[in-house]
Length: 183
Image (cartoon, rainbow, N blue to C red; front, side, top):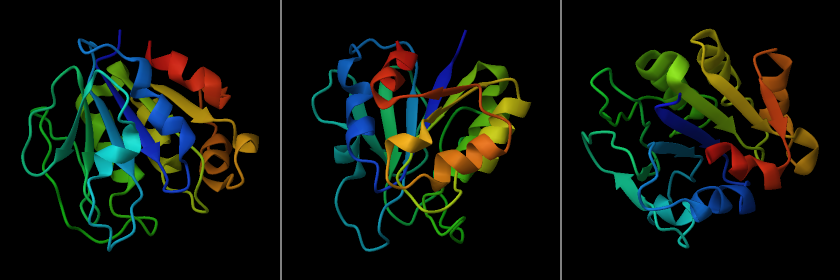
């Protein structure tokens, strides 16, 4: 049984993340937390990158928020989105990790410590760095489920391939099958 889902989404990964929460009902039983690589000068609402055609609530985290079921959470550019032990968020403006803020590794590692074996981590392709690979390994070490988009399904294969190379990936899935993992 899982209690939360974390998704790492590089800026170049456009179609897959928007479709992931798209078919979920409003009463979806898990929180979904998405770290999206955003340009440092991006001023818009990052929630638009998770898909607007969904019944589930999409929230941009602006401060200390409780992590609640039935929501998709994102952070603004230049803020990391770590999960806290009391199942809240505490945005940080720490240095970039793997050239990114928010960093996928920061979210994945912190969520692994909070949720342990009841966490699912999903890493999408679309960036030319290894952000998310270390975080997926921590999720795996904590007993959680680790999933990556098949590297060959995108032009930028570095992120999912780096995760696969750690030996910590449970499933490598095609984009169309990825959304089924949330059901």
